Image (cartoon, rainbow, N blue to C red; front, top):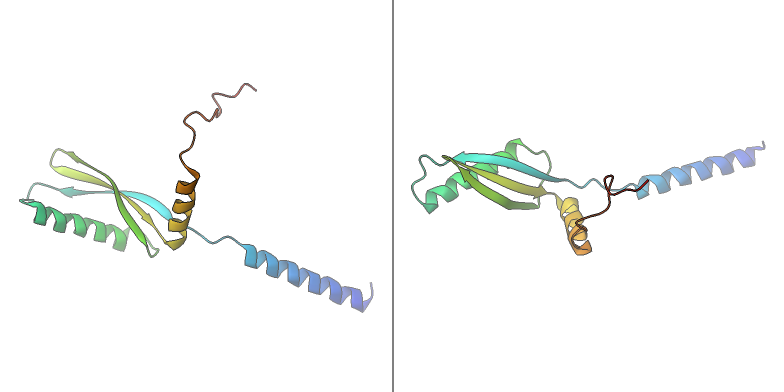
Length: 119
């Protein structure tokens, strides 16, 4: 191998690494978190709102380590004296991923899967 071939190979390897590094997908964070609040001492809507906001703030401070751009209440259900709240939380890349998924439309209800396979 001549020195010129060695340099060409080195340049090709560096270019390949650069392309690979630049093409790496970004991390998208999308999570669902369930939290709950005690309704025993909640007297009115204003107090419910404060307690609910405090629960969501607690999740954002203590349960995740990324900076969210989306926080949505997906579901809320009262069981006894507690309200259980299902939150959808995403960062900017996760928000884009959710938008892309929504643009594709709903998944088919029966995709065939493992049970529908005739193999």
